[in-house]
Length: 557
Image (cartoon, rainbow, N blue to C red; front, side, top):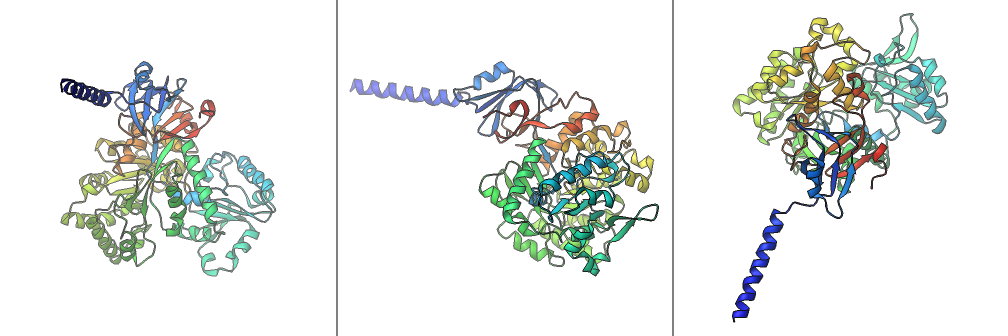
């Protein structure tokens, strides 16, 4: 009996020792990154971090991180490279961009007409004759040092045996003469009547057609549709392109020109666990006049926040109701429709994001929101307004009072001349009031609104936040309205995470948060400001997994 009692005592002691020692032992990291430059948002700097189970286990010196290393830990020497939190584009039409990305060309980096034409001529050499060469946006005339767009003769000469479709933002489009016939645009009297033929100062036809955003979108829809296989491959390629710029998450606002079937490729990649980007998406109203009925049907089994860490439903918008979308002069019926939909959204505790361009008309939107807020406070719902480049002090105060966040993009980087002509130099010197919004503790998220209207390169947007200079070198904001590099980065990370209620796990490099990060090819914190736009990621990690690698990290397992 004495032996049995002693055996039982020692057995319990051993079990207790193993349990307690395991509980207090440091976890073994899957990856340790060391010998780097990691600037934290509290101003401190470390050189190494440990990653395990998709989160950051530790931050500190290389020596301190050795305690996380086990037999199977991958050790990555950063060679003094700068590490930043994974970027979150808070307003990008990534789902739509992915559908056609596989086949589209890009003028995103072209700075001369010669470079732009070379992109077309090179594609024409390898693509079958009679097929389409499409540039669906992401560029603007002002980026060309030539001071003009390519002419019809130049474009046709670059690809004489192909159909050309080249869209500049949502304002103009070039379609080659044979392409116009191929699309049937020449026989579509209603649509063609909404377009204007561009005439240059000498009175000659340029070959470019202009129209409003809805008209240009309708013209694009005439292009041949893409098979699901093309959409799947295009989405994977576009997400890889985003990873290349250190983007680990996007907030997609849908849009009036994104039908419900357009989500099929994204959902399939999610089900197959093939997403390399965390996607939070909104649903826009699919049909005019049926907004509430459609939203109710779509969300029957889709509560707010449904999904997982890689794909999650984030409410409704940006087209909440058709009458209050791209409409600077809504009538009472438009406001009544919006009021009904928003009352339902409040009942369902849904996040809502609004698309609104100009401050002088946003009072129509606040009229509806204020009336509903008087009945039930919306502050906890994290509603937001995108754009509002000329936002006023009064609007900022209203947003602060209501708890509404502001989604800021770099539209003025591309359209400085437009804003200068519309509002004058004095107002341009402060637009947009990002620093004032931050001082008021209003939630601000950074984004691009890509890829039709702007480039999806986030470092262009970050550079513009810091120096205020446009694509053609014009100066906009005066110094006291410019942001520091760390504040601009916060907007594009922690700031964006607020809009998806994820700042507890995303948006900064901290122990216990998701291991979403980018190792950059240049030091964001010290290189000349005008070189920030050229930064790319050498190594992008999402949830602890490598999703993009190049340069010195190309051969990592």
